[in-house]
Image 1 (tube, helix red, strand yellow):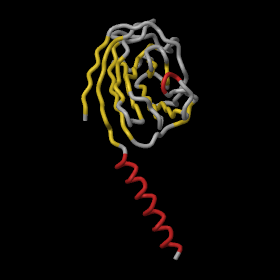
Image 2: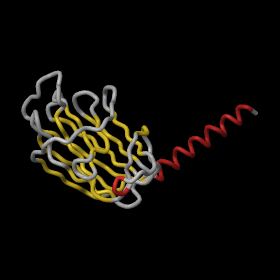
Image 3: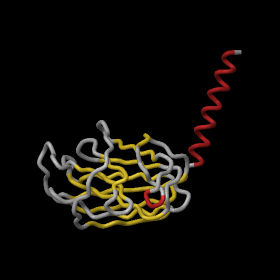
Image 4: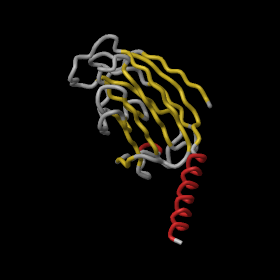
Length: 185
């Protein structure tokens, strides 16, 4: 009887995981590239979020892997919602909220202010982003979010890479050139 209960429990968990996976659809995605200097960030890269989407995933890598970068998510430009700095490169960020407001968000790649290894030319980067609908997942952070910065449900953001991850707000820096492409799915 205990074995039957365990098998039923395992089947229910498997069913729930499969239902969650089926309910999360990637809505849009795109790529971006650009460059930074030792003292300035790359260009703001636009990410369009449609109504009903709950998550923005962004990954960026310096083309020279030893170049230490920080990946930021902004809305509007200059207002950092989340940042990822877990080592050198790549950096990844997952920003989720049940009440994610539709509109334009921005990813930006910046140099780390005090790298352990001097930055090397070329100081270029490439990245990709995707939005999706479905349950918000990740680590809770303190974010007022919502429309116009009004207090709303807590945001969930996570940053992951090969080494230990940190999330913190950063101050904005100047911008330089870059390009962005977008494709729907």
